[in-house]
Amino acid sequence: MYKKQKYIKILSVANQIGIKARRGALFLWQRVYWEILNLRYKYDSSKNCNFVIHFLFEVDMYKYLLSFASIIMFGQLYAQQITVLGGGRPAYSYTPEASTGLTGGVFVIYSLDNATIEFSGEGDSLISWSRFGPSGAALPTPVTGAVQNGSLSTLSLTEADCGYIAEQNGRSYYMWIIDYSQAPLILNAASVSNDSGQCEQTTLLLDGSGAKLNYYSINGAPKALPRELTVSYMSLVWDKEALTYIQTTQSETIDDFSSTIQVPAPLCNTDFIVSGDLLLNFWGMEQSVSTGEYITTAIAVTATAEQDYREDALNEDDRQPTEYLGGSAPAEIEFQAYKTDAVTHIEWQFSDKEDFSTTLARYNDETLRYTFRDEGITYVRLVGSNSTADCQAYSETFTINIGEPRLEAPNVFSPGTSPGVNDEWKVAYKSIVEFKCWIFNKWGVQMFYFDSPDQGWDGKYRGKYVDPGVYYYVIEAKGSNNQKIKLKGHINILRGKD
Image (cartoon, rainbow, N blue to C red; front, side):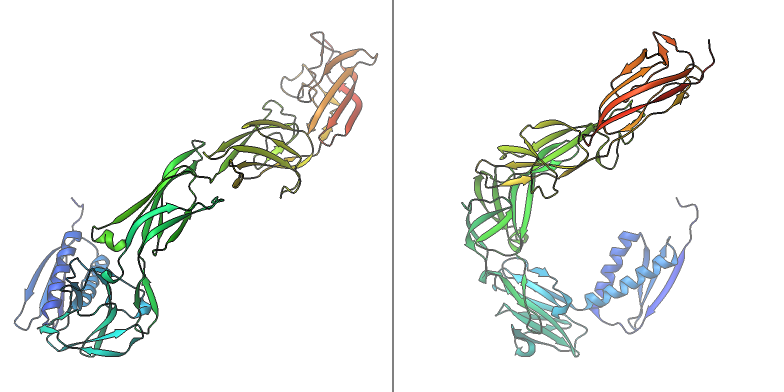
């Protein structure tokens, strides 16, 4: 139930209609709108053939006006209706481009047997017919023998693969008739070419025939109705979520018959089924042929890369880059290879050139863990090949960017005073691949030693906090540029004596 009901009553009068075809089409369109919009209407006709449409509905004025305009527009379109009958099967109707001038459309009949064209015009005025050929409609040939009953004119078709013109009251309607029986699709057999190297495209060989279904514009421009043959087969598609190749059905549409057809090469063994065409499908007479199982040679590879991060190394700069792989060395990355059925050999290629004109290293593992220690950019990709090496496939290229080394040591901290605040001595670093640090008191006694830059000194010696004062550190390290780093300095411990 609506919260508020608003009834709008619109009265529209159109004078001097008096055409049965238009009234019938208008009545039909009103019924359609009644079903869609749940309208209630009344149709009253006066002796002068005026009609009154009463709408009673629960929509706003804007929606009503659109609906009413649609009724009048479609009443005009249906007033001139072209119907092609006979031929043993229902005629197939095709709407060509407006530039062809074929306002009546293109019709395909199964044959000429008892085929007719019916033209429903405006009133009882004379409807004349003429015919034109591939050269255009400038000089048509008159056609006689049509039978007119009121506004309906029926012409028996004695010729097809030509255009027809229905003319009434100075207006012309152009259409083209195609006789399918003169260019039927015949599919006898299908096979796959034995050509080697079908890595991207696979060539199918068709035994059969099917000439183009040509038609012409009123200016003589050649056109062709697509036959739309379908090639169905199985292939593999990468599923990013499942991290695997999944077998799926592929379908390619071929506009016209040809003895050779190329389709994207399948990534698994499959049989190809060629079926069609559009017209035979429409008539329920589809033809199909199969190649039998084809052993594929086409391949594809996919690779993933996942970097391990040092979660606790809070004093390490660029340890968890989000926009790229690498960052602070050493960067450990696991590469995983995925391949399709026909891949027999894989190879990881490492290069310092984006085009892989030089190769630094090659590995054949499906799962490869590699630690990047050297400053600079390294490019990594996966390459796969089939048993004959005719086909090669490449994964995406991974770019690993290792930053330049940096090592800095603080000179003051205050252990045991404010827990969690400057209570541990740690270096700040990036891309340090080797590290050793010794800490001494002023008499040269070693207080602490550690060999990982993410560690630090808590200010204790043998479990107790050392006295405040000056201590000394010595660091020997190596960065991602293979350069040795030596640092020496003092550490001031600020804390009251126990």
